[in-house]
Length: 410
Image (tube, rainbow, N blue to C red; front, side):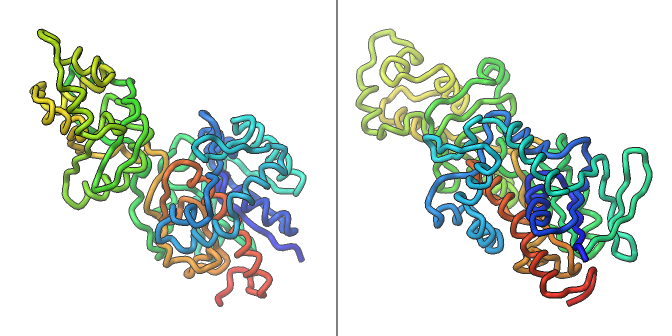
């Protein structure tokens, strides 16, 4: 008798779980409440689809902190496996200068098109415009269709891959949290991750420099430093070195109510070297001209110095050099979750076993950002999303092979 599988969520984790199960001979239906599947993948690929990261496995696994079950999933379906999978779809990959891995086309559309064709060949059914609305008393899944009709389904295997709450416009809106909590599953608060930080700029600085990058700077928060290009926004800072620090800043804000980050505007120079360059100021030379001539500072960087000091910059070279290496900025919040790249929180990892099966609901598996783990940008998010989708599907197959009855208890 053919094993039936219900996949709830048509993002990367759900689709790779569907493929893995269908390839093993299961009859698979993917339920997605949006009009089409793969929307998160398409959005992620707008500026080049960063599939994974090419670095030693030990370093890769460290990106997932203490989330051992996620680390095990990535170990079992690692960078090489993900690249081979993409290659099998006709989308070869390459490693960029930063170690990030991209499809050669740099786009998600060809990959998704080929993937959907493969799923169709495997017999996977796609049921779009079906929103999951919880479980029935008998344990079946209830869906509400776009026409308001209610559908109840039961399958041997159910895999949830509904994402977190960071991209509501493509379907990940966190609407699953309350039904899971009502079912007794411990779900930690969904919080923004890999997001911008909010800083109260003056009108003058905001109006002049919003949309301007601070090039080649180093940001420090709580003894952690990250280098790159930070983008000034109307509400604070985003991109490059900001996202890797956002989790630290978020947690410090929750603990202390405030957090200060420091910006090193010339991280390639020591304070001594900067002071030496500043030692000779020409007569009547303005401060802006002095900084541009001696340190090649851009207007946005000079504006940040003025912003952080209330336009009271020191004239003495040593003191000014120290300020240039640690411009203090007070962060009062991180960006809201619907403006974040990913989310933290979710189903506590203690709620699932090593097969990604909910301990409270045998036969029900969970993958992707519904689980409580987080990782930085750079390919690590998609890598773990794919890997946990594969792991949940393999766990489901192992559970069925072990002879567990549909919906039965262990």
